[in-house]
Amino acid sequence: MSLKPILGKIQRELKEKDEVREQVQMDMRRATRLSKQAILFTHQERLGDAKKLLDEAGKLFAKLNKVAKAHPDMVYTGMVDAAYEEYAESQTLLRLVEENRFTSPEELRVPSVAYVLGLGDVIGELRRRTLDTLRKGEVKMAENCLQIMEKIYMELMSMDDAYMLVHGLRRKGDVARHVIEATRGDITLEARRTSLERSIKRLEKALKNQGKS
Image 1 (tube, rainbow, N blue to C red):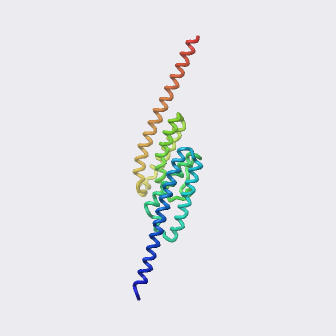
Image 2 (cartoon, rainbow, N blue to C red):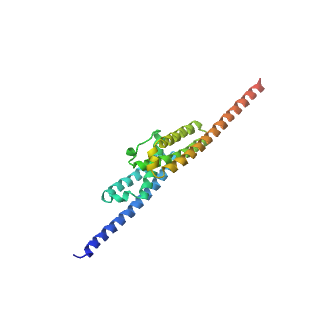
């Protein structure tokens, strides 16, 4: 039996797999970009635009799942993991901002590990939202963001096994702790500044009224 036909078949299979891999990488890069842009739109309160981008990203993941039936190994790559993680982060942030609720991995159709890691990154995005609200003088809304940040952190911290099984979660937890502390300090300073400003205005008003009497 000739070896050439056997190797020729293998070569064709490898070429096909390489073409599929290139397409998957292209799709995952695009999904990641769409998710990052959706996060930016969410911060800008352009929620409709954010949803459109995430719908487009979702179609790319649906396409990936179809490809995975013939090439299951394509799903287990760093680029796919990163794309899912960014998508989970963006979706979670959008739902929190728009509906004030958490979503499950099943609802988002993302792997559990990507969901957990994405959730950890949401804390950083909530800090950004907190600072935006503080600049607008909305201390109460900033405090609400801080409460959500703390809730995410505490719930992740309670997952003892996850810290051993999910690579990168411990580092995200350490970063989140510092982010939360910094955010609490920012809110405290702004609350004190606002309180002092109100006191000064009340005093000015009282002195003005006293001068009229």
